[in-house]
Structures are given as C-alpha cells and as structure tokens.
Length: 403
Image (tube, rainbow, N blue to C red; front, side, top):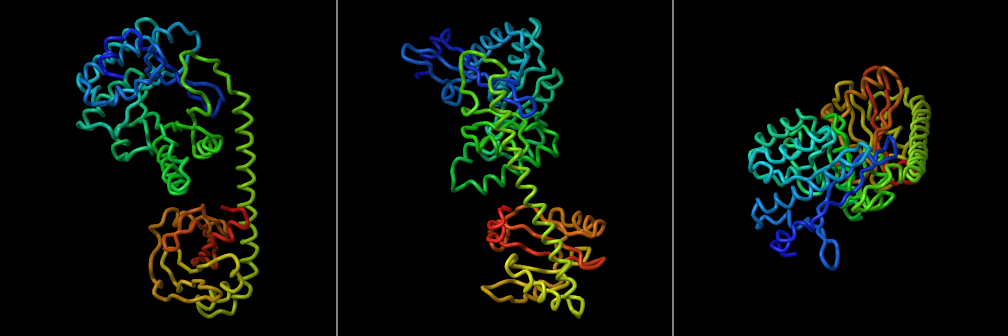
C-alpha cells in the first residue's frame, strides 16, 4: 500500500495477535502484537510499512502507536494475564530515547496494566546507533519490569557480544532456514550453540517461525521454553482460549520424550558395548612395549567401528602416533606426537571424569575438522595417567542409529 493511504486511513489499522505457547504448561503464555490495516478487499500486513526507511520516522511511529494503543485497550478488557510482545525498531526508539513509548505504556499502567507483562522485541542487527546508549535505555525499561527480547536470532548476522551487552530476558530464534534442506546440519549446529549461550546467560529461548512438527521437536530438544509459528497458531484479530492446544502439545511432547529416551538409551548401550570391548582389548595389549604397538592391536580389534585412534596423557599431550584407517589398512602418523589437545571443549573435564570413574566416555555428535563428517569419540583410560581416544566413523554410527 501507498504510505499516504495508510496515514490517511489510520483509523482502519488494527492489531492482530499471534499466540506464544509454553513447553512447561502447554498453554498460551503470551501474544505478539502485529499491525494490520483493513482495506475494501482484505486485511493487509503493515510489516513492509514499518521496515521502509524511506518513510519518515514520525509517520511510522504514529501508526505503530495507534495499533499498540488499540491492542492494549483490548487486552485491558481481558481477565486472563499473559505476556504482551511488542515490536520496536531500535533506531526509531532512540529518536527520543524511548520516552514516548514509556509514556504510552505508563498511561496504561495507570489503568491497571502491569508493565511486567510487556516484552519489548527489538532486532539488534538493525540498530545503527551507539550500542551503549541502547543498552542504557533497555536497562532503564527493565527497572519498570519490562522484559527485553532480541528478535530474529539466526535469521540475520547477529553479534553475540552485542547481544550479551544488551542483557535480554528472551532470545527469539528464527527457524525459517531450518526448512532449507541444504543448510539443515550446519544451521542446526549454530542454533545448538545459541541454546548453550542462552543457558549460560540465563535467558529464555523462544523459537519462532515453526511451521512443521519436526521444527517444534527441534525447538523442544534444544532448550526452547516458548514456541511460536503458523504450525501452532496463525495471527488473528481475536485472542483465543489459552489451552486451545494443550492436548495436542501434551501428546506431541510425549512422543518427543519417547523418541529422545530411545536415542539416549541407544547411546548408553553403545557406551557399554565399547566399555566391554575395551576391557577385552586391553587384555590383548598387556605385552605391548609402546603405545603405537598397543594402538596397532586396538586398530585391528576395532576396525569395523573406528577410523582413527591416538593416546594422550592427562594434560592432553599426545603420546602416540595417530592411527588412521585408509581403505582396509591402518597407517601411523607420527607427526602428531607431542601435540596438545587440552584446548578442546570438555577435554580436561572428561579426563578428570575418566580418572575418577575409571570408565570410558562417549562424546556428543560433532563435525570432524579433518573429514568433515559427523562423528563421536569414545575415550577410555588405559592406566592412571593415559587415555585412548577412538574416533567412531559416521557409517558405524548410522548403522547403530547413534547419530
């Protein structure tokens, strides 16, 4: 639509609401307020209007506040309490250092709206100004109980240091790219890293753009507490029953739980099989005079499962060659002797754990730097200060359903 048509028909703008569901209660915990306009033919989204930098800031702000005012007036009439997610362009917000928005919200607080129900959504990578000024404003908002959500994580390039600086309460992670098969694995790895970041920061994860069951399962498996998308609820002009999907979500999550438990059981059983196998193999290695002789025996015994073996001491210094499978034979690579691997994530933690428990450990699934394949590593204590690392091939993991 022409921007002037929107401005001259501002009374025809209206809020739509998209529900946000929780993993813990299987109910609607909030709504995102979206702007629409009613024309003679249809209801149209105003998303492109707000994202058009050619339109003067004051016009976009006027329309935004008109829609928000209607939404908050409607919400005040509801008995049920839920979170209210409102989108704000951080560049527009900083024009008056957030004063006009706060005045609008406080006017509704005077009518009985608790400001701790407000979640302010901003897209960090769209902000062009001084990040510390934005940080100060958001912290000021948080003193009123207003929560901060960083939007579109994963959809565009986001600077994690800037996100940390803004101290958000919620990260909204976009699952749109997950639908593109060619990007699935690498993108999943990025999103998994974001779930770890959120856990470290103590931030709630909200996965948006969920349009299929497998995306909901992925979001649940990767720390999602809140979920949003057309698969769950399309934006509508009305608020709906908070428990509209309770039975559906309960049933789906039970299936997700069952699947996850089976996967974890498979990994536990695989670990036990490697543990038993290594106890047998170590009996055959007793007479070995060098670590390379020991690995030569292990390589033959474990040839069907692994493609690389090496031994390190408790500080991560490699004490053997790499034994690498090439075709049907094994090749020793002595150039790896004395390299140190203590910098790897969880390396020293796992060493201490193996030393304490005197048991092997199966790693999580990760992408091998040299082969580019998804692999797991089984590490095992061979004496009080030395440990063997067994890289398990993708083919073996696939066969055992352990990916």
